[in-house]
Amino acid sequence: MPEGTNHLYEVSIGEYPWSEYITQYLREMQEEQSFRGNSPAPCHIIPTVNDYNNEKDSEFCPSSIAGKFMFPCKDLFEVLDLKWDGKNGFCAKEKPAVYLSEGADSALYIDKDLLIDYLERSGQEIVWTVLGEKQKIGGMGFRDFPGRSEFSYSYYWDNGQIKRNHEVFHVRKAQYDG
Image 1 (cartoon, rainbow, N blue to C red):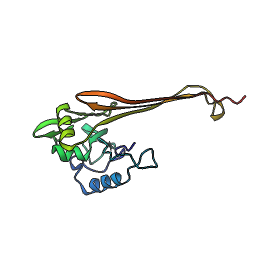
Image 2 (tube, one colour):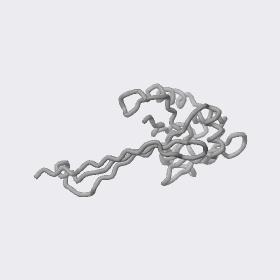
Image 3 (cartoon, one colour):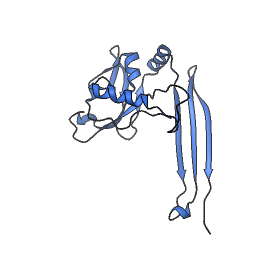
Image 4 (tube, rainbow, N blue to C red):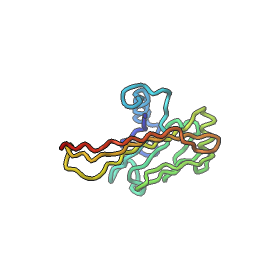
């Protein structure tokens, strides 16, 4: 599934997403959409966030909000007319709308009513994916692979509720060469 960028830096936080560097970068990312890495996505997908990585002692972002955090996608900026508040968030019509979380959770929080307004005004749908893998601890290399499980879930927004769309769970058995 196409994802937002995961290595934005060297841009001041207040320049996102308007600087020439970011505009060109996001345009190139949009043109390279792929699904599972090698085939076109079944529909046009707009990732909701882009990761920003603020390196230590960066001249581009105040150290008080340094670290890795997420920006809302450019489409959210355009439809909701978001403006940076000079701190850890963005406002829409002078009201706090989006909060950039820093630290361990690296999350983006958005006002629920504004998100619903955005979806209605832009004619978009929102989908969440959860992808993961758990490997059993043990073995001393490829020949002693102890096994693992892989899982994938997707959820969508429907009339004020989050609903599960699919669930895939696959177990890869241990492969011992006796």
